[in-house]
Image (cartoon, rainbow, N blue to C red; front, top):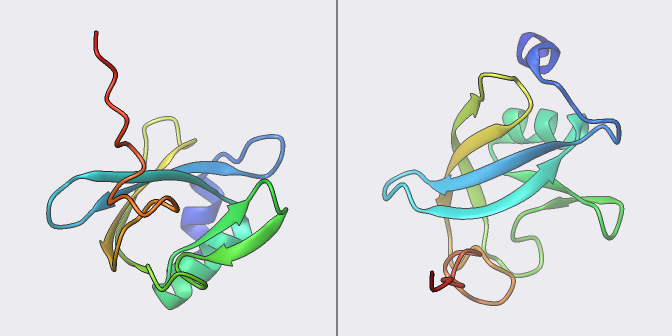
Amino acid sequence: MNDILKKITFDERGLVPVIAQHHQTGEVLMLAWMNEEALRITIKTGDVHYWSRSRQALWRKGETSGHTQKLKELRVDCDSDTLLITVDQTGPACHTGEKTCFFNKVDL
């Protein structure tokens, strides 16, 4: 695990953006943030954990809603500053109750 953590470039706040994608459909579910602790726990347990920038606290996805994410795969982008995870999503991913956080289509 230490090898992967050494490869990731965390920002000045100690965070890295994480894109969560459904492992079966490929649908983009959400964008969130992880710090090193959230990433370590996620890799160790398989339960996806994020860092809440508003609460300044670690949180396990679904700890209050029951809409959990189980880690299936972890990828690091070419610059090592963004993560892509594929997950098994239970229930909706968005805190609004929508399936994905990207439900607002913009008409061009």
